Every structure is written in structure tokens, then in C-alpha cells.
Length: 465
Ligand code: URA
Image 1 (tube, rainbow, N blue to C red):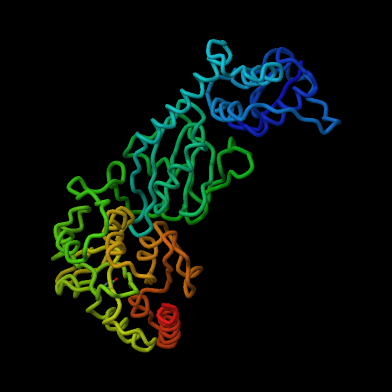
Image 2: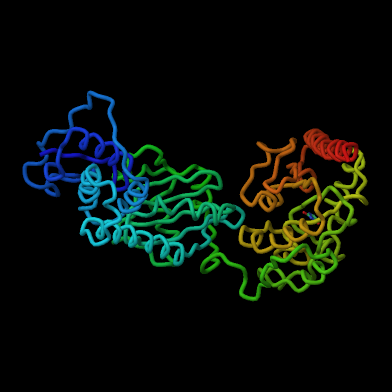
């Protein structure tokens, strides 16, 4: 009897390698027992802990199995039934003699493996349907967490779906098996949270802190598998902050949100009128009006800011306050005529908190940016600019559809998937806030230099046209 110990419950590569070696050694399925690292001796059949491991393969030989078996095995291996490894090896063994075995739908092994794969697929679909993120951590560095109990070992498999769907917000999905984390760039995994500690919705943040705060070592049962890491500090940081904000429920547009239109490009005036009644997020409630983009239809450059400020909210025009004046000056120095560019914002309502007579600017959060992105997309479709300049982190998040650091990306032309170019730079308000005059002047010059790249691009395109 041979004992094969896989690295984890989802170690398909380990299973595949071992199964191939076993088959090439002509070791029959009845002579093999499968286990997973970390299983205690009392979880194993008696006497097995002393069973020999597989001898190394001496010859570089191989055999072919149908591609649909590999696909089936890749999914069925995620089933929670402990007998799945043996079942799949039995199928592989039988496929050596009968290449068409999978077509025999009444065969008990085929039926069972297919049923397992279907059950895994249903569980993945259920996860996609029921996972509800809640915003935790401080508003400006929000993080989103969800609790889910999978029926099968699907979290790693399903995580890429959530990374694509919620690419622009950092999230964690906590489960008893394993926890998945997305920081806007990479997915990482940490040990699961025991079922007895299952957090009630209002205790999600508390659970998060208990398990993932930066100064606490990872739980001893942390998976050892390659590629599973502690969450990045950038993931942890917001969760250690004090304030809590709960958006309540899945991050979807506000119930009164107009459905984004998928039609061919609207004209900008139609868009402006429609956006005036936008209820896609709660920001419309306190703002004076929607501040839509402005500029000529012939503009080839679109400048994107964060959101209207106090002055813009009152005037109904983008970039007319202090940040606008700074922008005008820099554009002029860079050789860009503001009257020839289209200027807009990622978020089109002013977000603020009242402080006496003053309205204090608040950074928009990810759900607000997402809710407003339909307007940016439709402006883009209507205008068809060849270059989009993202000023600041909020604009970059909207333009790229995910969190995009300024420092790493600024000052160069970046290809967008739709064939346009993007240029990332700082927001003029950032320059206004710099206290040191020297640093301010230096940063201002860098901003002008970035805008000169836009001017150069426009000239080159005009010459080529
Ligand atoms: N800041 C912005 O991002 N946009 C404006 O319109 C004004 C200030």
C-alpha cells in the first residue's frame, strides 16, 4: 500500500504528478491511499502512516489522457468528499485502457466524478451570488470584507472572479477553509477562520482585526502552500483604523440608480441632462447639483479630476476654484489651451462634511467612484479623445478601473485596453496643500512636465493626421 500526501485539499498539480507516476509504475488504485498534509494520524487508516512513499520515476515516460478528463479532475478535486483523490486516480487508471470511458455516462465512477464537478460549479455560483461585502476601516482607506461558508474547497478557484469583478476595491473574503485577499493588484491567501468564530455581520470587523492585525503572527494552521502569504501591509492598514463605515450589503449602485446605457455614444448634452438627475449613489442628496464635464466636442484630450469642490458645486462647472486656477496656470505653461481640452471629474457630485459655515471636502470612496464611472465611460464614448489625463488617485482609479498608484505610473503614456492613451499625474489640489514652498515649486514643475507630455502627444497626433 502506498500513501500519497498532497500539499493541500486543492493540490491538483500534486495529485496530477503523483497519479501519473503511480500509473506509470503500474500501481493499481486499490494499492494507493491519498491524504493531505497536516492530517493527524488518527484521521488516517490504521498502519498507513508507515506506508512507503512512491519510488522516484526512473524513465521519462508518459501517456495521454483526454483533455476533458483533466478539466473534470481540476474541478472535481475541489469537492469536499475525502474519496475524490482515489476516485479520480481510478478514472485515470481506467482511461489508460479505455480512452473513451468518460463518454459512458452510466459508469458509476464517471457519474460520481461528474456529479462532484457539478456540485463544485453550483457552489462557485452560490458564492458569486451570495457574497456580500461590507465596508470596514477608515473611509479614505476603506477595505471590504465578506464572510462565506463554502460547501467545497472553492475559495482559491473562485477568488479570481471577485478580483476581476471588484478590481478597484481592496477586499477580503473570510471563510472557515481559507481567507482570500485582494489589494488591487494581487490575490493572497491566509488560513481560514474556525466555524465557531463565524462573525455575525456586525462583528465582521472585529473578527478581521483579531485574525489579521499586522503585529500578530499568522494562525499556526496557516497554509504552507507556495503563493499563500500574509496580506500586504496595505491591506491590513485600513483595518487597524478606528472608524467603521458600513455600506450594508453588496456594493451595487444605489437602488434609484439609472441603469448604465449600453447604447452607442450619446451626445454630451444628452448626457449632461441625464446626469443632472443621477441618483446612483447617495452623494446627490447633499450636493447642490451635478457638475458635469465641459469642453469642445473636438477635444482630443480629456482631463479627469477627482470631484467638484465647494466652488464648483455652487457654480456647476468643473475646476473653477483654487485647484482650477492652479490647473489653468500649469496648462498654459505646458502649452495646452484649456479651451481646447475637455475637463471632467471621476465623481460628479461634491462630497463634504459641514464644519460650521465651511463644507469640508471628503474623498469619494470606491462605491461612489464605481457608481459614477458610467458617466465617465459615456463621456469617453461621446467624445472619443485619444488621450485621457488622470489627475490624482481617484481619477486614476476611474480611468483604469482599479486602484492605480500615482508614483509608479505618472509621467508616461500608458496604453488603455480601448486603444487610447492615458497619462497619470498628481491632482492640482495636492500642490495647493504642500506646505513647503520649495517642494511646492518642484512638484508644480513636475506637474507642468507631465502636462507637456500631453501637449507633445497632441502635436504628434495632429502631425500624423
Ligand atoms: N477638484 C477636482 O477634482 N475637480 C474640480 O472640479 C475641482 C477641484
